[in-house]
Amino acid sequence: MDARKRRWLWVALCAGLLVLVLMPGCKVGYLLRSGYYQAELMALREPVDEVRASGRLDDQQLAKLDLVADVKAFGEEIGLSSTDNYDTISIEWERKIWNVSGCDPLRFEAKTWWFPIVGRFPYLGYFKEEHARELESELRSEGLDVYVRTAGAYSTLGWFKDPILPGMLAWDDYALADTVLHELAHATLWVPGSVKFNESYANFVGEVAATRYLQDRRGTHDPTLLDAVQRQHDRVVYRDLLHQLYKDLEAVYADESLDEAQKLARKEVLFGSELRARVQAAPLLQPQRYLKAVEQGTWNNARMIQFKTYNSRADLFGVVLEDEGGDLLAFIERIGVVTDGAKDPFEALEAEADRILAD
Image (cartoon, rainbow, N blue to C red; front, side, top):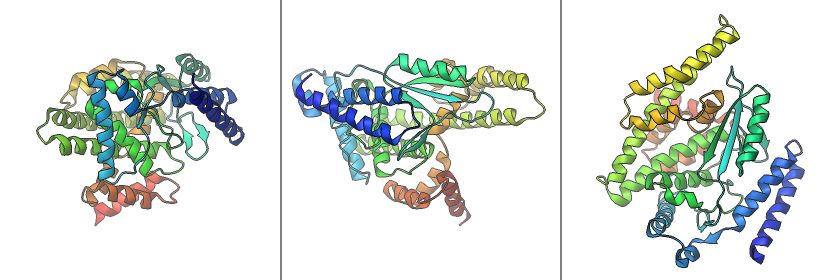
């Protein structure tokens, strides 16, 4: 490892030790490990232009780098904050990122972890599967539902200049544009204390902006745009389906006429045959994608909590965007004003949407 990379490792590790002082309630081992792997990732960053000139990438990968740069430029054109994220690439970084969440099995009460500035998170991220599995076992021993998944991208929420990860170069254009614009949305507005609100807001902005990017750059008849429109339609249908499932599960958990065994049995049916039947009956344009999702991995309360973290109240965000005439920058500024000082940003958003609809 060259001197520059070694120096970066020491800087990041020292920063991690400072965080430990600020976070006495968190596990020291988790923070030290995360600090080390974060430093490793940052140390492996190389300027995109240098990697481009090195001959290590094929034509398809080079085209993805061009896409990232153009998406960032489009983000600036529509008023999103410019950042240094994705100006570098950690092409030699070979790890996966693992997210672990836990939740009470008979109520939607998530296990959370607190961090300065950003507030409480309903999951922890790891850079090695064995560490994620250690937490999975610990949470299961507490009697919790647990969901473990991999994440394709990684964000330090503005603390560092996030690099492109090698796996991102294999994504399709819509997914890559969505992710880049999602992160630019975070950089433009972050509401302190509510990860769920911030992720749902950035998800909404990223999807809307990614579709507009494809339309602006490639025209209304481009196959990639038409596929993206179909995928957005299906996302709305699928999210509505899962939100209804969430409500049905809440009703089961709150039903005092059922004992614990009966609630668990009903839960198993809802997450099993009932969920599959609902997906099969849903008006999806690309149903196989979601039928596959239903069959993959464990479905439980922890998975539903992860879903809610990234997919809450898109309908309300849509009301505000429409009231701003579709202007994304005006929408973001308004969301910032509406949530400023609010104890619960979702309640503030709902009140604003109600006011708009009542006018």
